[in-house]
Length: 541
Ligand code: G6Q
Image 1 (cartoon, protein in one colour):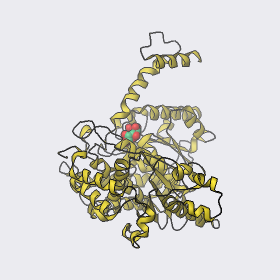
Image 2 (tube, protein in one colour):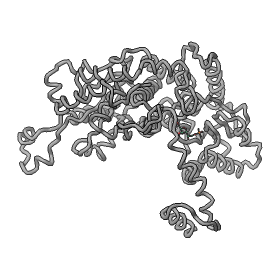
Image 3 (tube, rainbow, N blue to C red):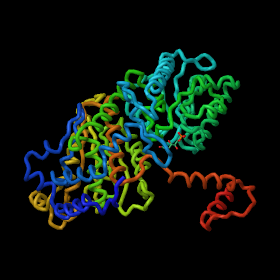
Image 4 (tube, rainbow, N blue to C red):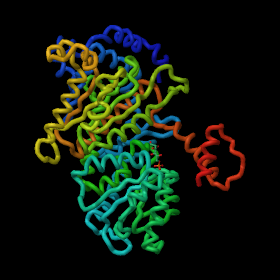
């Protein structure tokens, strides 16, 4: 843990000075004066090509940022995480999601005992179950094979499997349909179940705690729906399995503990995709492809642990984020995958990043005096171009962005992919270099329109390319972001693995729930606004 507040360190002050020196230098100038810039600021890791040359940095910037990381003890903190130390201090837990994809099974010790045998025995259990479902050997209560898989979970127990199932749809078993129900809004579950045959439907209830209001409410509704048609309680174990750490609650719900897939308290919800929470993904793409997803994660885990900082993609991503967040005062960061399969990636990373680094207190419990986690948002390209890119190009805010693209498409219907990628490359070029008044005049644009048509450029982007979207590449991509988030959490000296901020709303919702009953007669003791809103709601029942 650092001895001085971050902003008082010599490394921070050096960056602040450096920022003043280079803040007005443009990307046009930086590229103009260095022919090797693109090569210098590109890192290749297997099939991933990470080009960060279109950032407002020089070699000095990167050197100073690395010094900041070193002063924050990043390499040491990485070892503490991989080594099973209880770095999730406020919950008293280790953070070992990297063990879940440790495909070579090298021992990972937690309190002196190796966690890998239990990781692999759970993978075997998932394998056996997913093969039964995929082959049609798993039968529902009336003897029909499964056609529909409805995942019920929320947050970390929804976003990961939902994002990855969509991302890897190309590799999926096409005669199975997947639905992800998370919201407690009746509409979510009712619309998902609309038209499904209960006899062909399997529910996977995913909840680490098995106490989450939304998930249990949806699971109870699913059970009622099933029993409404299959009548007997005995049908439940044929149509419900659970992924959880809470066997008692799973059993009370009526699920056979044999059909419960467990994981451990050292797996945080938003880092749980590679645990049994990934069960729907394994059912969709099969065991071998799931293992290849894990191997992709593992490649980046090893890269993050062993590559020197200057060649370390997640560390560089994290440092660039700090550069914009803390020195350029950028408030947000856009995730722009040029792949329809990755349409849920921005939502997934919103949680991964903002729940991890949206903290305002440092590891010693003091209020931070600097900005921490950025607002993460985004959309799949090219849709965003016809929507919010206007602001990226000409708005008053600086929005660093990650563009993600693939050299070859998985499916081809002509020249779509070439057009898609032409747009990606064009956007990063336009953002970086803009269009000057001179260019516009040469094109014959009337003078009065010049201010409106000018694009100043100098807007930073990273471009992440891979050959094709495969399970392996997806694993690498997600692990890059996980470790980027870790890097930033260490530099900002915050605890990235708890999420206490989400508790207050849950507590208040519990209190308000009975008050929404039109027959509730006791005095309301909230503020005037909340009291009025509750009364309005009741008056309309
Ligand atoms: C993730 C969070 C949170 C969690 C959900 C669901 O890191 O802890 O998003 O995953 O609240 O919790 P359960 O899995 O316990 O239902």
